[in-house]
Length: 196
Image 1: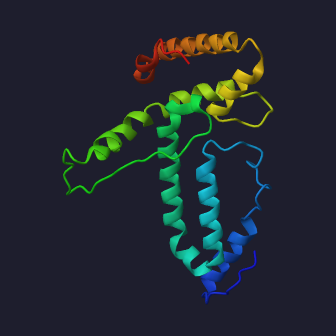
Image 2: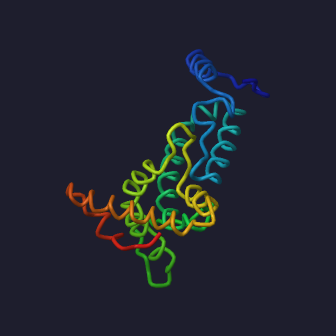
Image 3: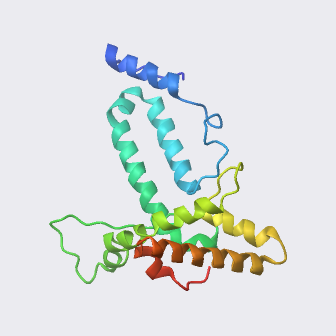
């Protein structure tokens, strides 16, 4: 990578940056370039932020860890918050509000109560079961697709999409029952009988 402005880096920083440059794969060249992202809008933001950091090596060295932490949390949070909307197509950014430990959420702060940590915690419980079921729905040898894309593909599959969706519902019901048999009931009790 060529940087427009060379920051003054010490020897160790320069070595770290050189190693990072060796490992960076150009967009479209990495092992996951063929897969469709689950959260396309977040991928775009992440790439933009990394490009900015790459133009400022000193800042990159200072803030890479914080940036990765922020995006790791954002990715998990947005994935959890978008799970219920997979029928709506490509996910959109969802608001998530936090307050300081020392603050109190008054009744006027309705957004914090409705779209705060408790909402995120409830949604997070769905992540593993839904992603586990999604893994089974992937076509072996093909690139992986997010749930919303699998749903769209099912709708576009044929004129008999209602039968295909019924078959998927039957499969998911069996999945829930087998999961329950293994003692994992957190998810199953919430989604038994829910129609997809």
